[in-house]
Length: 387
Image (cartoon, rainbow, N blue to C red; front, side, top):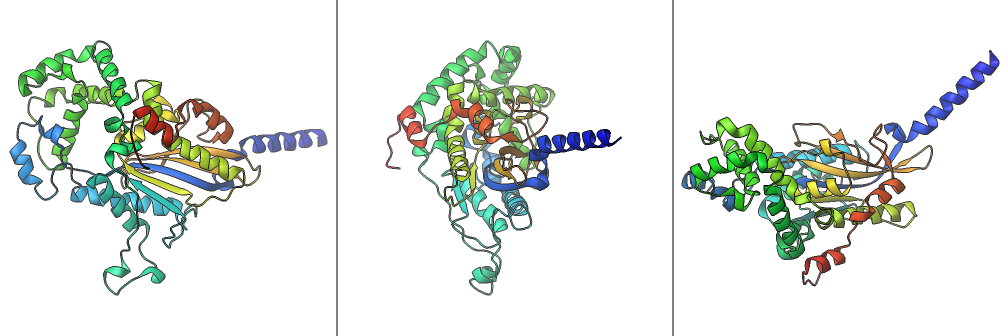
């Protein structure tokens, strides 16, 4: 009986030790990088070119302008900030203070109005001014300025799909190959669209995503989608998702798109683990659906867990240390739509799928092929910059 009790205790201790890294109560959050898609917006010029009612849309959106953040989008952006405050603030993991402290947070946005406004709205929710930071008796009690970084679009690695010559060459190849592969089942749609809109999608299959984004914008504006599209909307959605995935069709495309953020996270995590002093342990990138997708691909998120990001979607990488074992691990998290859906823990395909946590050394080894420094990005893309 005594031998049985001792054996049971040993088994329990062994089981507890091997699983302690996966216990949320045991984890200390040390670093977080999050990438969000901006809030709801009006159609852009490419989408408007596919509309049968462009003047009507222009009249409805004259205040915001093309690709501008709508009031719904502003509310969505505010929800992004509330979620960050709840998860990373004093009531959450405590990575951020209730006060805005410049050495705690790095905020970057692409140089687009909708992403910069999203960043500003998110910060308004994240940092409502405490007494020490209230600057007057009116607005100063509910809002304070929080700085962000934005670089010219032609030099921004977050805009790799529009400024990187090498990526554009790879996309040209991807589009040509995909027409007789991924898009072969959708040739009937190409004929239908050409008849109804006059546009030949066989010249650019990325237009499938452009068209589907137009429909989402129309619904957001309270308009109806065209009658011809309603019967084939599910198939159009499938084609749109295939078009989105063209941005990650090759390993080199993934490296160019997500390698810089991955490299920055990995390097900062390694510095923390080695005991180096590290500030700004929360990084936030106010960007686009392609930024989320490229980082998910670069970190090898399980494929079926990679949706097309909606407005207000968030993908994050978090570094933890186990208080009991001292082991370091990385956790991927996803929010489908801030304010509407909860935080979801994802899985790395090359790690133990029984848990969302992946030991840091294994994570780094599994993703090393995609690491790319900012300097290497500029060189690969033939971008001349002073940054």
